[in-house]
Structure formats: structure tokens, C-alpha cells
Image (cartoon, rainbow, N blue to C red; front, side):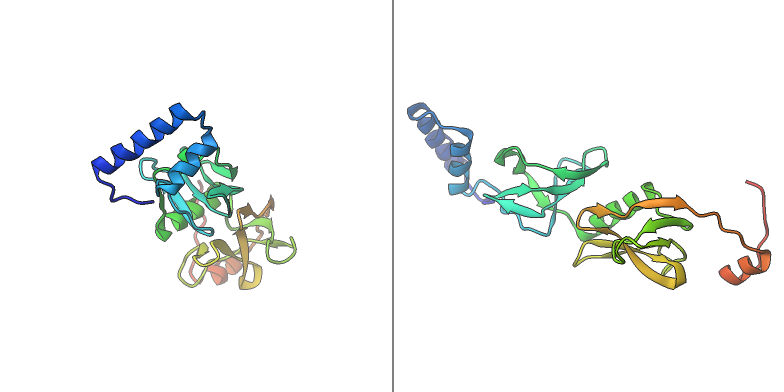
Length: 202
């Protein structure tokens, strides 16, 4: 979106639109075309996350664009609640959108994974293995439970036998089937975590 208009230019554009409205009974679609012709509509790109500068939590991922409007987007609302779909009702809703830094996207998605209950012991339907059930188990060498891949926008986690599984892909979260109760002896616990284990009451 063009941002270097002078006050005089802005007033001229608004005056031109006002005159057109009075002479012709323009619709919202006509207004959209007018704004687009004057560079007043932000240029969005498919495959990127956007947010409003004055909204702390709201952000969407652009899956597809039609006439400059997002179609079938997904993301977070102002309360940080996940939205499976978000539809743009008008070009004016795009005013003020800016691209979200990768770090903010990663933080939000990892927090959503934790909120959804992806933790050690749960059984999930793997998005990468044809919905084959597998147990979330272990961490990456960095100590992270989740790994974010910037290029694909996916979230992966470690599963049984130190394999990796995608739990978020193209706006879809893996389904948690149930929570597994781990039955281990003290020696098995010590072998698993590489240290002595002391059982304490919660």
C-alpha cells in the first residue's frame, strides 16, 4: 500500500471519491476498485502471516487470494483463540495489516500446541504417516518439545523411537486420541532420563 501521500494528495483523493459517490450510486465493490486504483489497498502475499499493528494477538495466514481478498485463511483472534477459517468481508478489513515476524508466529503456534495438550505420553494421529497413531515421546537434542519449520509453517514434535511427527500442517492440527499411562520401573526411569530418580508426592 502506498504510504507516502501528502496531506494535499489525500484530500484530493477523498474529494474525488466524494464527487463520484454523488454523481453515481457507487457500491462497496466500486469503492474497493477506487481504492485499489489509488494504491490504498495493502498488497498481501499468499503463504505469509499478517496482523494489525494495534491488535496484540490477532494474526492470520494467507492461503489464497481472490481479487486481493484472503480466502479460507486461518489464525488467531484477538483473544488468542484459534480460528480454523477467517473470511474477509471487505477490503477495508485489510487496512493496517503488516507482516508478522517469524519469531512471533513460532511463539504463537508453539503456545497453541501446548494449549491443545501435545505433551509426552499423548497418542496422536500423525499428519505425516496417514493418521497412524503414535505416542509423543522425548525431545529434540536442543531440548525443545516442538520444532517450527519456517518455510512450510509446520510444527513437528518427537514421537516414539525418536522419530518426528508433524502435528500442525496447512492450518490443520493433529488429533489427540488419548493419554497413555507410562508404566516404568525406577531403573527404566533412570535409563530414560540419564540420572538418578527420586519419587516425590505432588
